[in-house]
Structures are given as structure tokens and as C-alpha cells.
Image (cartoon, rainbow, N blue to C red; front, side, top):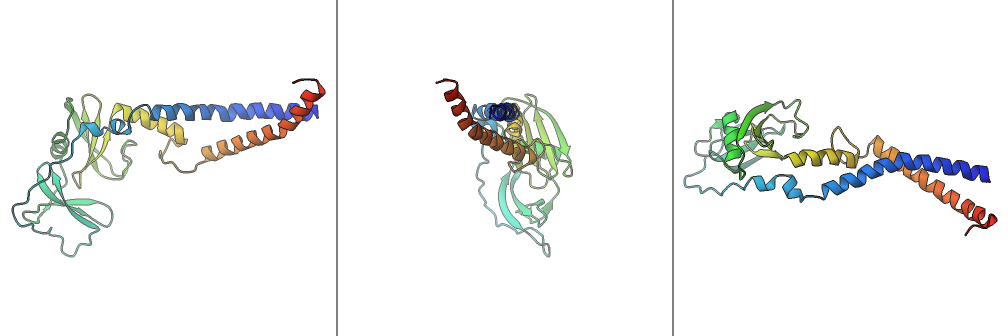
Length: 230
């Protein structure tokens, strides 16, 4: 019985190291994620909402006859109100509500204006670069063609070139938070909280460690009684 207890104890210790370190990372990453308010992490304080627009002339529907639409909305943009057309494939187009004419994709200058008209910080624009819809940056995670507007303090804004909407804000703290989030859910590729092999492996390891502890408990009690231990 002593040999079995010793072997089980050895397995328990090794499983404790295997499971314990990831649990430590999980606790530390969770602490980091509650350190700052999520609104500050997301940079919500860096942009104000667009002011409501007053429509004084009749609206002309967009010239999309015969084209299937998924959604149509009228939204404020830096240059004024715009029809935002969502196509069945998820892409967007803009149209002028005064004429109904379709507008070209947002340019680099237009993307910068979309950011700066709402920006509340003090930094200046450092660069405006295009991102590839087929290979979007990890911090964007959307398969869309977008403009990355980077400020000289490292903050980045992503503007959908189709809709003109600011779809993402990325502060330095957000990037650190995102790294900790990957540790927390054990997913360094998609950053999505879905079951994966690491979660499954650690879960099985934690279950085995608990079962070993349950199995060793009566053995330990008998051993202590036999040897006069309290």
C-alpha cells in the first residue's frame, strides 16, 4: 500500500506542475484584464459619437436597381450623411443621399478625416496605410479592406474603406490586454474563447490530479494512524 501511495503521490506532484503553471498564468492574466476599465482599454474615451445631422432636402434612394441588398441605413460621416449599403457578401458601399449616386471607396485622406472629426486626444497622425482584406492584421480580425490610421502615440484606428465607419480602436494597453487574453483562453491564433486542445488537455490534467488526490486521501489517513501521526 505504501508503494502505491508513493507512486500516486509522485504522479500528483508532476500533474500539479503541469496544471499549476497554466493556472498561474490564467490567474495573472485575469488580474491584468480587470486592472483597467474595459472602456479605457478599448479607447472609448478617444472618440466621441458623431453629432446628429439635420436633413433639409428630400432623400434620394441609392442607385442600386437590380442589386440585392442585405441592409440599408443612413449614417453620419465626416463629409455629411451617407447611405451605407450592405451587400449580401458583407461588403459595404456608400451613396450620396442628395443625388443617390454611388460613391467610391474611402480614400486615405477620407479615412483620416473620419478619425480626426471624432478624435478627442492630443496626438497627431503619423501614417495612414491600407490593410489587405485577405490578410487582416491580428488586431483588426475582420476580413475587410480598411485604412489603418496610426497616431504618434502608437494608438491605431481602423476605418472600413467601404462604409467609412471606424471599426476598431487599438491603444497600447489594448494590445497588452489582448496578449493577456490569449493566455487566459489559451488561444494564440484566433483569440476566440472556444474549446481547443490546450483547454482540453489542462482540463483532463486537472481532473486526473483531483482523482489522484481523492484516491490518496484514505491511504494517507490510514498511514498517519498507523504511524501515530495526528
